[in-house]
Length: 87
Image (tube, rainbow, N blue to C red; front, side, top):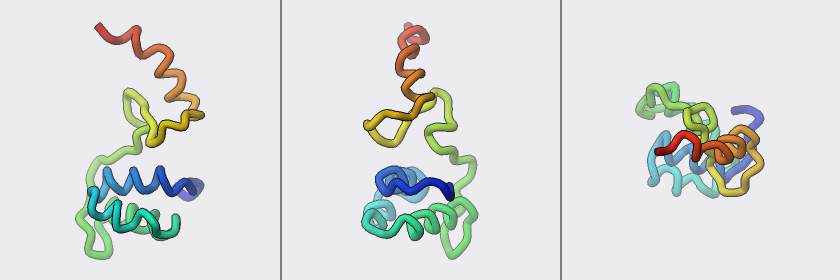
């Protein structure tokens, strides 16, 4: 998560980890602060409820993204073949 610097992505991750209220309250915060809140929820520190077994969307199956911008190769490739797995 250290290399991640996209506020839109981090806000979406916060929504998954902490819920929409926390995500909207931190949407305009600096990236460093958003990462700290996510880490707190994942570790259960600083009074946050610990979130178990959460994975970012790009590590799940099927893979997905947090934005509509594209450019995430694995997700783009999945979009190409997704129809082969649907009935």
